[in-house]
Image (cartoon, rainbow, N blue to C red; front, side, top):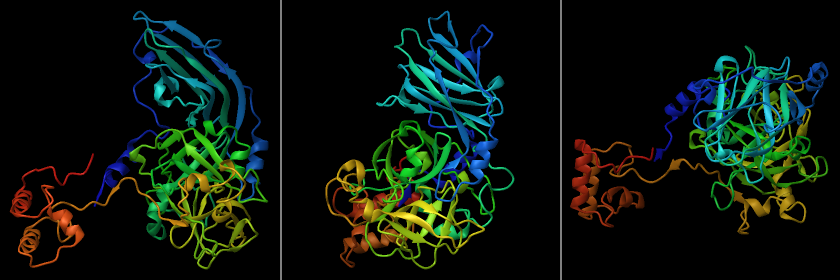
Length: 510
């Protein structure tokens, strides 16, 4: 049984990647290598008094989105603003600097995003010290929208370069997210409450798979939490469960940004990588209500989640029984990933929601939409409302019930059933899916000790002599030449492996 992406390589990737990166395709801005004229035009946005927004953010109740910024509407079309330059080889380059005084970071939402083949979009700051991109035609969506993850600083240059003879460019930036909080890295101290538990602490170890399913959601100027969820086909459809109230006032899901693996690598660390993001989603189903409904939203992510993110699709249960020893995994206040425990059971809050009182850890603004897991590690709800905090440890939280969301409403747009069980199998309990886990046997390892040696040869000999009745695993692991039988040729193949001959039969995919 082999992991396709070695954990050590994954950790190195997290530590070495730029903190502001998202799904993009590399390269450097063309303006770094060609002579361009100036001066570079600047679009200065109106000054923003963020004190009111900071106050509102500090007064937000648990079970609500966390505001980290202000959305500033603009109307930016490269055909009408910025500097276009024609280069000697026939390529073209467009640039414009956006300046929003006092911003800690800037994010951009595109109402129109259509790059032609060979076209590239970059973001960078002064002297190209930090760069994001290239975004290319691979980032185009059928619905035409796009958004960038927050980019550090209050001055960001947008640059597009087009190859000779490339097709038409169709871009329109409709808003800029002016961040008044640092959502790219934590300060010396965590943003969330003192009583929260890092998922990297020992108590999080049994939940390692489910932790990989949880994402931090950038919904315009708001933050929520969400969880990748499996479906009965187990086909890695990129469904993510969150709360409807997170989606309701956050603009189009086509410009949402999803950040995975924002978590500490050590128990007492406050830092986590922010380079694992994808952009865009489609709202597949929702309750379209907060209080008199399960308050759920099912999104389907538009960009493919790279294998390097190690995604996991959490299982679910639509049973109506009270969830035992429920667990919540979430991003409180947009902080690194945390985990909370109730050592008893959830209770009924009302027809649509569970009630949970935490014994260890709590939820906070930004935890909204996060999944509630039962003792079987299956999703049974999503965070809707609540009153818990580190100063109110036993304040109850309410989670929309999966089993009510399953049949909620009369159409596929208002219920989970059509998406999580599209073939109508009537599945009630579904385990999680790890798409990167190969459970096929290690060829030659008949005793399952993960070492190929003379003990495995002895087992093969005994199978051939019919001295033992082989298990299904041994039949697969012992048939090294895949001819359907175990014989002396397989003994020769195992001996070659032991002697170091590289038959490539035990190599996992890169």
